[in-house]
Length: 594
Image (cartoon, rainbow, N blue to C red; front, side, top):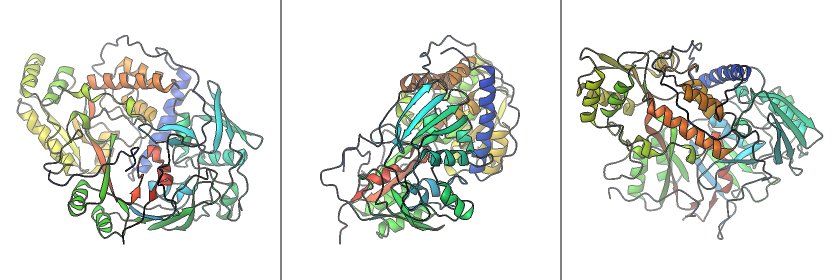
């Protein structure tokens, strides 16, 4: 295996203190509401209107937390493609990679769907973006895709120069013509069309203008440290006006982009992509063909692997453990998502949870390892479910270094003796009782809620577990804030800034815990203006520390996905920041066994 891969073989079993001006903050709130409507549509449930945020109580006294000084400009780059990846000496070109995905696309128009079945794993890979993510190594750095260079010439202005060697795929009606700045303006303005599902990504863009055929100017409404990330998002695909004109939209195609893959077949249950011979980065892709089948069942995908119908598959841990017990040549990787998993929220507007000491004592009664069973008996490691390494505050963060260190979670859980003392000192009445509302997202969520109720009972707090459907959980918890304690999935927001303003700002429409801290508000508003990654990361770590100290919202077990593949598949490193799947251009095959 290449040393750049995080994959490993499975062992045998068992064995800035200035606030945004009022106008800018009001604009951000309006943009956020648009984004919330977008993500609500992505969940498949009608979550209803966004309510007035609950009143915040028990706001702590703000402390003076010195933070990095906001920088007005981002650091420019002229990197057109990944540079950290060094091709192996025995690299083999060509071949077909066969794998399965859990869901297919609803149609073929990248601007009219948020579907990962199209944008990350399907025909959407035929399109390029202005920027993309370099995922070689530990981070997810934004680099140029269609651009050759860019600079931030003013606090709200980005100037972008396009590569001069990019052509549309050689299919009618484009027939291999050169990409122009006018194409990019057309595509981004189309994406930003009111009521289009991906429009919120560009809601802070005031103007996109072409200057000649290779230069663009993008002007913002207000500072936004995620501007380049949004342009690199998998939803921000660049499409051509000629292709749109064929049928009025791209639901039925034609799918013609400037990306590394060309569409040979695109149906609801399967997609076949072939390498673009005219791709501007002639190093990639290494494969000739990608064949993707839609197989919703994890068990069926694992069966496809065992029978070698598939070369790789995303599976559950049980299927992975079974497969590696049978075969010596299965390799695997696990990806943990700190922004997804089992989220615990405590409503600070309700007694007795309105007391910080009570909330901290409640956490001390809970053992987050109980009820979480992603790992088979006898197989443990640093990421054993429920360990500190498996916990987070829940922020969607691109860089691992921006996560709160796991040491900050140590000593906050599974200490009933200290909890009893804290509750006595807090003057908790034995008559107090709470309701734990748990969404039916899976048995692990139910088990966690029941274990939490038992922990509270052990220190004299009566807790009732109320199981609700995922639809009711969205309505009652995400939107309505109707809970004492909730156990469920976190709100589906992939943007760090959108999540912070929606969930943790004192005026956030999804701040249903009711927790308010002026210093948290200040840090949220500072990080959106901070373009320097190191400075912004310091702000985000301090933010998470303040949130955790409030003892009102955290993820007890982050969601982990497992991929397995046969050992003839090389350099498979499935990192997908904001839906990016550019890593597939670097996958290659050795000779399959007979």
